[in-house]
Structures are given as C-alpha cells and as structure tokens.
Length: 208
Length: 356
Image 1 (cartoon, rainbow over the protein chains, first blue to last red):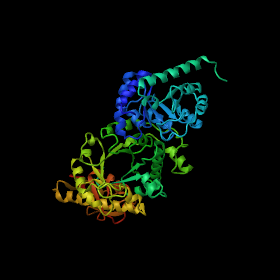
Image 2: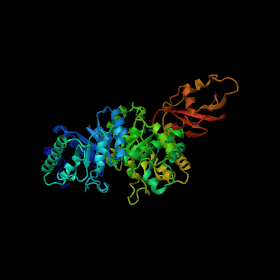
Image 3: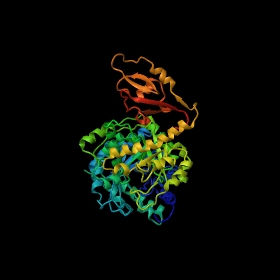
Image 4: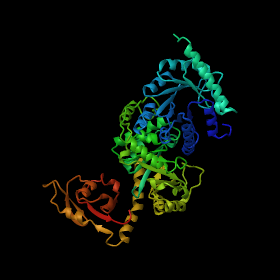
C-alpha cells in the first residue's frame, strides 16, 4: 500500500461502499496478523460489515471473524467447516478461491459459502496468481455451482461489469482500492459499476 | 513435563533439503521407539492443507509403531486440532504466550468432535494411496481431551519472562551451540541458557547443536531436557541416535535424582514400605508361573511379563512419586509401561519427595 494506515484505507473503502473485508497477510508473522486483525475486527463490527481472515482458521475463530477464505493450498473447506463447528461457530462463512471447475464444485460440496474465481484480468498484488484467465472460467463455475461467485484479479470500475455479466455476484479487489489516491472514491466507482451491471442483468431476459 | 524431556523437531523443509529419501513418518516412528518424549512437526514452506496431510501421516506412522508420543504442530493451531495432534508449538515471532489460553480453549471446545471423511484429493505428497486411505480414517478434531500441550520458542530472558509464559507447558531456548540448521547465526551459549532457566516459570528445553556428547552440559546448566533436529534426522541410524541421546539425557538427569536422595533427610526418602507389604502377597498366579525379583532388597514373586508400571500399580504405588532402578540402571518413568521384569531382576523403588 502507499504508507497510509491500513485501517484508514479500510474505513474509506467502507465509506465508498465495500461490503466485506478480508485480511490477507501471508508474508507477515502471526503476531502482526493478530494485531491488525484485532483492529479490523473492531472496525468492521462497528461498521456492520463482515470480516474475513485468509488461510488461518484458528485466527479467524480467535478473532471472532465472520468468515475464513481458503485457497487451493490451504486447509480443505470440509476441514475448516469441521473445525468451526467443533469450536461452536457453525455459522462461520467459508470462502474458496479457485479457477478450476472441479475444485469449485468439490469446495461447494464440502460446504463453501462462496467461490472466488481469478486471476481474471491480471493482478499486480499476488505474485503467484499466474496469467490472467478472463471471465470464461468464472462463467462456467457460476453456471455450475449454487453459491455466489466473485471475480478477483485486476478488477476495476471499468471491467467490473464484465464480471457481473459473466454470472458473478460481485468482485473482490486489492489494488483498485488500496493503491488508489482516493480509496473511498475508488470503492464508490466499483460499487456503482457492480450495482449498475447487476440491475442490467436482473432486467435482461435470462440467458439460454 | 518430566526432567530429561527429549523432543525431536521434525522439520520437513530441513529433511527435504538434507535427507530427501527419508520418510517423515518412518523417522518419527524410529525416534519414538528410540525414546523421544515428543515430536514437534514444522514445515514453513508447506500450505496448511499439505501440513495437515503430513501431520496425519506422521501420527498414523506413530500409531502403527505403537508409540504414544505427542506430536506438536509448529505454529498452526488449526492444523494441530484437525489432526488430533497432542499440542502446538509457537515460534517466538508468532502469537505470544497469552495465545496459549485461546489455544487451550479452542482445543477444549474442539475436543468432542469426530472426524468427517477427509478429501484426500489435494496436496498429499508424502505417501501412496494406501497411506492416504489410512490417514483419512484417522482424521479427527481431538487429542485435546488428554491435555493439549502448548510450547513456545524463546531466544532470551525477555521472551522467557513474557506475561502468560506460566500458562505454557514448556519453552525451547536456543540455539545454545553452533548448528548447521542455523548457519551464520552465532550460538547463544550455556550462560544465556542458565539465565533463561532462572527466569522461566516453566521447564526449558535447550536446542541447537546438541548431541549425545554435550547433552549433559545443558542439563547441568538447568535445562529440563533437549530438542534436536540434526542429531536424529541427519544420523545414519535415527533409532540408534535417539537411543544414544536418550541415554545421555537420562544419565545427565539421574545424578540430579541421586542428589535429591543423598541430599535430603530420611523423611524425604521413603523406601516404599507399602509396596513391600504388598509384595508379601502370595500373588495372583499360584503354581509355576511366577518369577522371582528382588525389590528394595527383599525377594518377591511376580507374574511373568509384568511391566514396571503394572508392578507399581499392583502395589498401589503412585508412579509419579518414585524413581525406579532396575539392575542398577535408572528406568525413565516414560518407559515404565514398556519395561517388563525378568526373573532375577533387582529393583530399587525410591520415593522422591523433594525435587523432581
């Protein structure tokens, strides 16, 4: 990010219309994640939006997060759900990132509440994200699973409509907001683009 | 944690770099049979999915070997709980000791849950399909019911005295001696170990460049035991290497027990007369099936195959309050259940009131 306090950026993003916040900090140690997580939990609770922790189910539970977001290398969805239930948090939201239809279907069968598909347009934030895949895989996955599908990876206010038109329920962004000089305005532009595309999709006759 | 604790740090990254042919599960089983008291499993390069699979495989191997040695997962409490591991070990730069309470609370809440079926499709690289199926059945949120261990690494007195440290089961301090595992970093030395021991509210294990020849030095400096990586993982025969470490640590701890016995008055040492009373029992197995042992100087008949644990329990002796020497060799308490008495054995059962 650009040196601004994380909480300031997040607060501005929520002002602009972000509806969920996920903490991802794989390169920092758990103590730093915990400290930031505490502040984000407090902030998101105050603003009434759900808070997610990436990868670590234990931290998600200990921080009383609303959800955990998992990737293909992380704990399987079924395990995260099992631990959440054992810990008395059966309502914990479990998200899963993949671009592979089989993995998406398996994750949903295991109890994933939503699926994120990327890298759609080429992110600069995730070195291991691979080549951009476009919206094709998202459209395929969105047609095949019963849970909401989000698009991620280089999504901007300019291309967000394409995600919704492909069947996406929303978008997840890092740079588009965090690297913007005005995070609130950036979030607002994204939220408006998504809302407009959703309205068009809702009024258009269903495909097929 | 008993004096003379021996922990194997099974570092899968270290293993992959130094002994790629060695299977972690086999190594763990060899070390467990050789006498380690706990195994800490770490693999910083692996995602949590693969770490869970590896942890399950190691636990499965230990179970197959009949070894009841707790496995502690480095850093990842969620993986430890899902694998039904015996505990979690926190690096110093991880969550602080106050996290221990959260760990135990989560472990306690999660203890009742049982395994659903696992999906072995992802991330499993350690074994073939057979092992995969085996681990799939052993998955379980649990282990916590028996007491979930929480340890932490520290690198100085400040860490050892951090608030909440008394809620931990143990600390690991190091590295004490120069070690290949941390090339370039200068060792912290024996004096620093003594200093950490003096401020730590819980037992301290020494780590770093420790082998059978220098183990006694860290025990003398106050360490409750040792943790090793290379001394076992890089040994040509991990089982024999573990046994050598076990002997070295036991020998280093044994003088401490003797010192307790020698240095205290008669009130502190009580040859367990209760046990000797019990020994006059005719025994439950009349006829030619009993064998003769000498306990605290008195002959006594026991059933063949009796373990030291069974013997002590049959005499209502609290195993936690005694030291046992068999044929003039101290038997580690950990081995009471494994060591079977033989005809003609000479046992000394010494109640240690102070120390321990």
